[in-house]
Image (tube, rainbow, N blue to C red):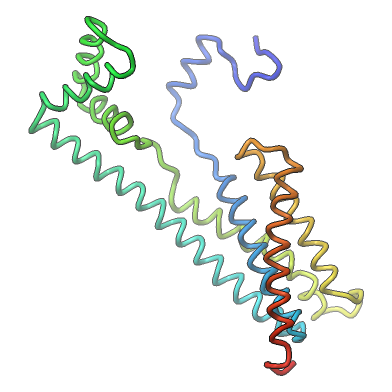
Amino acid sequence: MSVPGIEHSHQPSEIARRIQASPKHSYLADFVYGAIDGTVTTFAVVSGVAGAGLSSEVIVILSLANLVGDGFSMAASNYLGSRTDAQLLEKARQMERRHIANYPEGEREEIRQVFASKGFDGEDLQRVVEVITSDENRWINTMLTEELGMSLHRPSALKSAITTFLAFILVGFIPLAVFVLQLFTASIPPYVYLWSTVLTGFAFFGIGAAKSRFVGDSWYKSGLETLFVGGMAAVLAYVIGVMLRGILPT
């Protein structure tokens, strides 16, 4: 029987199912942070160019170039970072395997001290050491997590990169959408930059509210925080554009 407010059941069968199941990685965090970065950087470009008084065509060209280029750069960085983490894990695994093969007693002593520090002693401690060191993979995994503090489960580097790129492009396009529409229709109302600002503000707040799921913060506080940070980036870019107005032809 589940209890309201409890995230999951604590029935023995459910506990066994969760422990035995392979960990499932959520890529929502990659989407949220990609969306934040895409919206901030694109709106900063839009604000800077608008502040400089350049045309909508220039805004669209520079913003699209920035959107694709920065989106790919962020996705590539995410991919390479995830790949590096996986490679470091494998390197550490091979190192522990060599240590167990060449210095088994020293590695047993490490296991003994690890679990002694957790409060095990006497026959209980000896039994824990025997159980763990009786299986090489279990032994290695224990050393990786307890001695080196590494996580054994890594998300897919490719999926993380793709999710980040799509979020960057899709949500980062919002500040630019009104300017693109203006190029193809005459029905767009005046004050295009103001409309872009309003839409981007909603995007900032919505992304921040979604981010609260991962940081445990209140949705409105996280939304306002992201709105403030994104707004500051836009203000700075706009001010720089105004300062440089006249240097480039409109």
